[in-house]
Image (cartoon, rainbow, N blue to C red; front, side, top):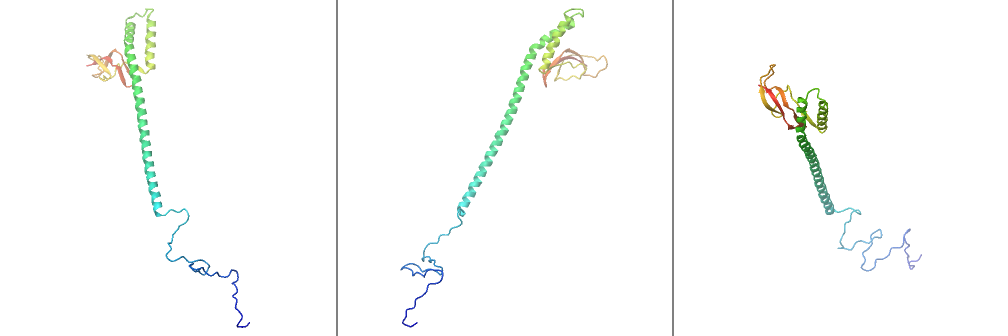
Length: 206
């Protein structure tokens, strides 16, 4: 080949010949990528969907606020449930007390009839043909009161209790019982549950 012959540069294997940069275009690096222009802002980006620090702190604050609100609602629900349970128990107690008051009022109306039946039985002769009928009526009436929780109280031989009994007289004890022992029941008393409808009227040993 003569010196006058023009030398032609062969392209590198596996690629196109390098293209000369256009006027004003930054030169390419060794891998064909263009260098960034001087003074261009650099934008830092993270993985897709990852919040930055400020957004993360905001999310954490929101979670804390939601948890505090949840705890407040839970405490409110628990207080409401406790208040309702107390209300339910109070209403049940009041209803039970109202029932007892109603039964006591009915019993007070019937007790004089029972007393009269007791007097009639005590005064009647054993051969009286009506005695058995009076006893039957008296027994049915007492059984009806017992079915609704009203019980007779005849505390003969028990110790006198001013909360339950009414002393109408005192007497010397014929058999040497201790003072305060009930010697005679003048009139039976009646109770419903723990409440006294009428105290038993009794004679007490002096």
